[in-house]
Amino acid sequence: MRAEALKGHLDALLLAVLEPGPAHGFAVMGELRRRTGGTVDLESGTLYPALRRLEEAGLITGTWTTGPGRRRREYQLTERGRRALSDERGVWQDFVATIGAALAPAATVRDAEA
Amino acid sequence: MTPAGPQEIVDGYLRHLRSLVWPGAADRDSADTLDELRDHLLCEVEQQVTNGVEPRSAAQQALCGFGPVDELTGKLQRELVRPHLRRLSNVLLLLGLSAGATWTGVLMAGPPEPWTDRTEPRTIVFFDYSGEIAATCTLVAAALGILLVIAPGRFLIRPQLRALCQRWSVRACATSLLLGLATAVQLAGYLAVRAVIAPASLSWTSIAVTCLLTAATVPILARPLRAVVAMRPGQPAHRVG
Image (cartoon, rainbow over all chains, first blue to last red; front, side, top):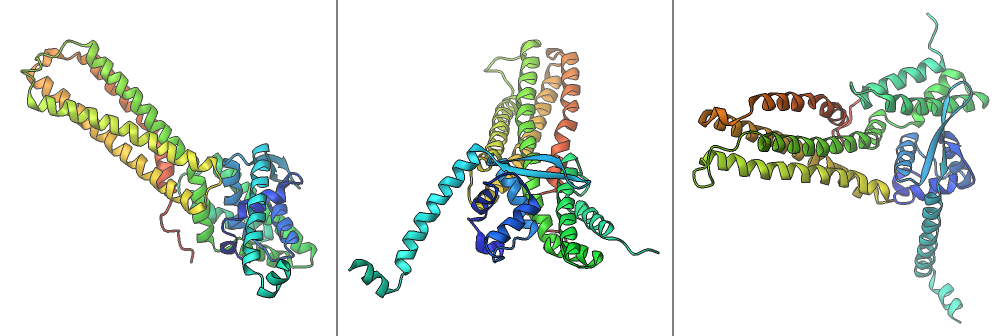
């Protein structure tokens, strides 16, 4: 799945990946790939500008650590980021419920009403 | 000659990227971003080598994962230009306010104008009013530039809207800069006309000192301006052969 298909959801996905704890960019990308069974395979050129954007919005903070012989930047959610993620989850669940109901095959709808 | 190892391949790519993203405007921000990208690429190489891929091929594959260089350049520039744009708007506003206050103070503290409202020459009236309007618009445009670059950054708004705000912020800064220059020209015109009509009505020492102070602020403005021009959002991305 390419970045275009994720438009509007990428920020929430990144926040969700960072929810359990701090991670660096490469780990974020790997975790996103793992969670989606390899379906979402971001280009790094999409990931880093998005992380910058989230940092500027105060939803994540970045800190420098030392990796294997080199500098490494790790990101973690801020309180504001946790609230934003919770809001995004709510919006997404409403969206899935509404569109799911509208797209459901007619037989399923009749069964549900019966 | 030994073929380049994976680290050399990665570093060569990053040098190239640096020359595209920060043409002549490299700073600490660029070093941080490049360090972060380098860590990512080397993580990718290490993972692939662990999976049995030959190191040089692993480096090439890691670079492919970054996507086309011109796309990456554009995306990075759009994000990285924001701090410079914010700095430029702030500097424009602060310099506009301080220059306006200083020049007003110098003219008010000096000898009184050698005319009354009735006898005031038309050219002076023109420079007076147009200068005030241009100065006010300079400050308003600079404030708008700050608002447009800061406000979208504080919210999770759609990237398209954010990019639009950023483009308008650049326009607001350019407008503020041009109006600031126009104000300076009008002030120079006012001083020249007044100097011809009544040279003794001006405090030349204060004016010379204020001119020097105003000129000294140019480098403060030049730095963020150079960075924004070099990383201008919306300019066509550089093609890589």
